[in-house]
Length: 308
Ligand SMILES: Nc1nc2c(ncn2[C@@H]2O[C@H](COP(=O)(O)OP(=O)(O)O)[C@@H](O)[C@H]2O)c(=O)[nH]1
Ligand SMILES: [Mg+2]
Image (cartoon, rainbow, N blue to C red):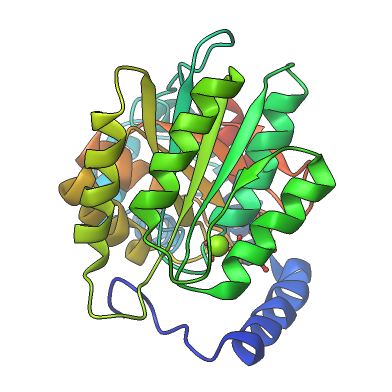
């Protein structure tokens, strides 16, 4: 699968996707559940260690890290899975880190939300808005995904539900121009947080990364404020999410990541690979389709989740 996956035929695909998540919820097993099912009550021998390694890899933890972990585990003479899980949990904490998004009230913060179609950008923007609304932030949204009429509508609906203003132009408008207006408006209104939605794929000949670079340039030209690029990745897509992180990071730079769909089939291990290779912090986890299904990323509770 390429960077943009294969999502085209919108509605039908979306319905299928929903169906898939609904069903998969019942089958979702955490890494901990899998390990306990395979090895509970058994003595861990060399064979078992190899199988544990495989199980880590299927949870997207990546072959290099999985290999490291198992080699360390081998020297410890741990005989049962519960002790092995305790050991793995502790070790894995060395492979990830917490990040602080660094958004404070009383100044203009601009959050540029990036990611391929369908990962959950617009939904995440609604969740993040709600999260900061509760902290008393004054928020403004910008409908920068002008390439799909439905995208502008979707964000507009959220803005109505949350009762926050939105800057939008006509479908197909230049997103850089939307961003230009949005920053002026944010300054005029004394907004604490401007959140900009972007397209995940362009239905024109324009290259997405060029388009994003243009938006970046406009933001920079608007002065000096706290600007963060937030990449949204779908936790169910595994290694493809790593490719996305690498591509967006190379093109425009990523300050932090939100991993979504952690309630669905997510294996979560991709967090380790991304942090090891790209050293990018995770700020939030999306744990469902509802507005309140958002958590701040915390490495200890993330590891607990994986092994729960
Ligand atoms: N289960 C689940 N679904 C999510 C989550 N975040 C987003 N979605 C769903 O993913 C689909 C695509 O979301 P959308 O925000 O439109 O993605 P975008 O194309 O990146 O803007 C929608 O059906 C959302 O409800 C999440 O954390 N968990
Ligand atoms: Mg969207």
